[in-house]
Image (tube, rainbow, N blue to C red; front, top):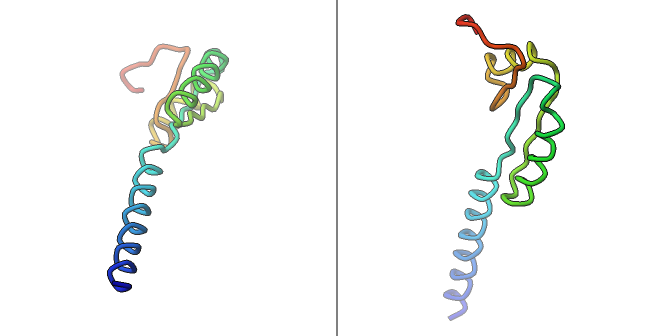
Length: 89
């Protein structure tokens, strides 16, 4: 009986650990960079989104050019630009 209880406790602990690991993977923060103009509204939306989903949104207002560079380099999830993009962008 003790062996069964110990085995069940180990199984429950492993199942809990794997569930927590999967939950953490799904809650990865979203990152973005670019134009400074939309930053205030992005900050408000980020707060509301975090409260609703638990997922954070980190936006770096580094300028349109910087956002384009970071999205091209795939270092952020999204970029924002005040200037229209060209075919080269």
